[in-house]
Amino acid sequence: MDKGQFDQLIAVMNRTETTEWITMIVLILSFVIGAGTLLYARKQLLADHARSRRQLAIEMCSHWSSFISPETASVTRLIERMLPDQCEAIATSGKLSIGIDHKLHLLNILQLRFPDVEMKLTELQKGNMYEIDGQYVLYIRHIAIRYLNMLESILLSWAMGVADPKVIESEFSYLFDEEKGRTAMEGLRKKVGMEGFPAIEQFMKTLRERTKARSDKVVRRSVT
Image 1: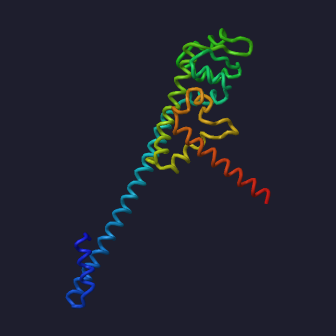
Image 2: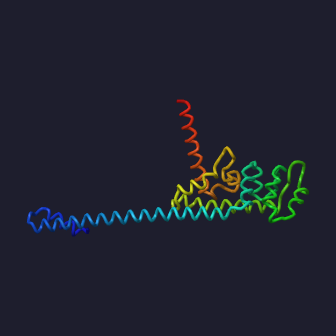
């Protein structure tokens, strides 16, 4: 109903002739039908938007599943166990000193690209440490940064609200578990620059706050 029709409705309501009452009823019905049509259209638009967000989230999860490889899994597990100076070495592609107890992780990461790496590790061993630099550190850094860039692009859709947040949070909440040392390679992100991965940082902050809230709730229950 436009402004002219609305003004006409108000004018008719001030009269009492039968024909004018009929006109008024017709105008009211048209107003109700128009409002109902708008509400239905809005409901359909919101439903379509929700479906699109769910579809995008599902596509993101599928893309992530096809992206993850044994190499990336080993890199994240290795880096999340590293000390700050080791993360610094990865970030700057410097010399990495790492315990020989991480040999299996190193082989999982490097052996496909460097078939002779197991023999090389023997040469690089200094006591109970490996002294790694050059192409090996560059390759580890490459995999780690590629992983973070992919994760950032997915979580950016979550941060901007273009993908269904519940789906993304459900599928990627495993990335944060401080008891198991899972922080999406926070140590490396700090050395590279947190500002380069704002969506990851926001996601981790959200999960950390929720974990704390649940923990506080459990404590309050136990006290009472």
